[in-house]
Image 1 (cartoon, rainbow, N blue to C red):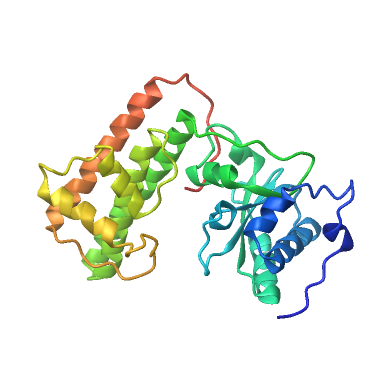
Image 2: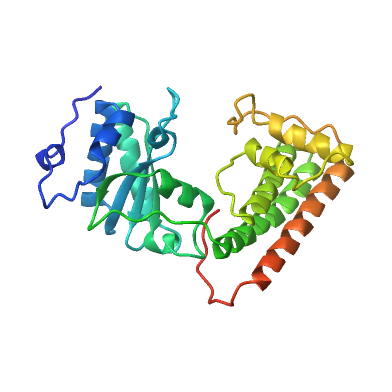
Amino acid sequence: MSCLHLRPELLDPGPSAALRGSLPTLHQVLSQVELLAVRHLVVRILEEVPATLVQASLFGSKARGRARPDSDVDVLLVFRDLPPDREPQATHAESIAHQVAELTDVPVTVWSVALVDLESGCRTPMLVDAMADALTVWCWPEPLACIDFRAADALHCCAALLGSVAEGSVEYADARAIGNLPNATRRARDDIVRLCTALLLLRGITRPRRGEVVQECVRLGLIRTKTDPAAERTLDWVRNSFGPDGRQDDGPVAPPDVPEQALTEFVEGLIERVAEEAAALRGKLPSRGTRRGIRV
């Protein structure tokens, strides 16, 4: 590994350095090399990315103290303002993270957001959870407060999820038409996860991911399977497709043990259910102005 050099003020921050994170906590969850890599990353972000950084925080499994040996060191970058597509600043930050990872052998990654993404009606569940987990590495002038997930956020995310599923229906049909069953199968699986995620978000539940989303919907009785064997087999297929640990996104996805028509009807039923529940929730809220789009 190459020798890592940091500016002295990051090793012994003075009043103007604004490096006021929970250092004892960071020392508990990061090794010395990981901590130096993260600090080096923040220095370069401050110096090289053409945007005003407000806060840099550790989040994810490392911040929660539940990291596996192969877990990334995830850093959330909150900028004062970014273009709607987050570019070119997000790509620039990712490039810096890649260079730091090569230099230090620490798999550091970044996620760039803007302050507007923290406003009610723009929050994603992943961002809410990231802020809840966050251990501040650098901030100016003060650490940002945690944010909660509100009904307006749920509606905004559900609209984006339903849009993704609509695109998925076309992709699924096109893939089957040309005989690309692996792509069609994966798309169907992912769209079911998106719809189950929407059902949970409408109830303010943000934490489950991947197969856990389906399991939580069944546990809460949001999807009843006892009277619908095809639905039960479909949901078992979705859960099992993420592997024994529930985290395997990239592996092959075997086709479900249900007829194609039953799978289509199941997805269409979920779409209708999400749309109806979202409309009911929207009717309970005061009307508000539109927000700019977000990525879900």
